[in-house]
Image (cartoon, rainbow, N blue to C red; front, side, top):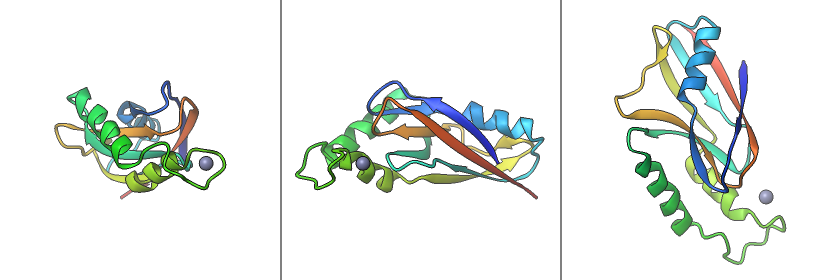
Length: 131
Ligand code: ZN
């Protein structure tokens, strides 16, 4: 398993981690197979979506804020229930096909770490399964 850290810089943000994952693939001489990308956190998530236009992820984060307001009479004493809920909605892991040592992503796709209660230092686990 390969691990790397991401320092997020805002309370809520999307960090493009595609290059970090492809570096892990190169470091492990991955060729063809499958890659599991997992974040061991309860208030962060990982997703694959558009990276060509930065406004897309800004819109996604804004829509999540509307769906899950920060204050809504939650019971959790830490006060960050909205971040937990957003992490559940978006998911803690994604899989991607690896082809010739690269992620087989679509033209506009990138892999993002989603921060919902930052800024913090987050870990990303990458498990590579070669064919
Ligand atoms: Zn909490």
